[in-house]
Length: 257
Image (cartoon, rainbow, N blue to C red):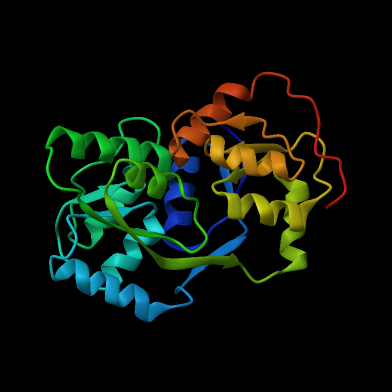
């Protein structure tokens, strides 16, 4: 499917290893260049207190919106309960810590979709407003929070982690000249692509994990060649494989903002 295609993986750790396995399974070649890293939140005490409150039964639901968030709640000692996860990667990450996701969206794996799915679940069992703890990235969007708040539920938002730029290695960054595609897995990755790699080589393909990331690329003056319909690494690679035989005009020749 992707025989010989050199694909830049923008993360390190378990996320990178999962992506590399998916690339190998399709005949591609992974090139790991970490662009972002996950670190503790600016206020770790607030996060610890929120998880302690969850463990004490002060919330009805815990919503987790990424594999990094899952790792954070596991490390903080979160107990099992009614947990809503944004997608399959988050479900799998929760499972590594013995936590089972009660609910996740069926198709679109975004905060808005999670808000819709959880809202529908709560409407199916009418009761007093539910207390929902959102464990999010610092600076994450408000789609999930707004969807639940608009439905009358009591939402507490807490930063579980921060995403920061990974250390720069100019020599390593030059590998962009030798890759065919970059997996743009988040808005944070999109911003680092713009900071590090502009002007991008003609013909290099940007693969966005979904519409929110595609919008960030557009705000940065970059047009994604492929936007995955399934918001997973596997979905990104399948979308790239489907697009690869067709001509996509060279692009991304602008200067950094």
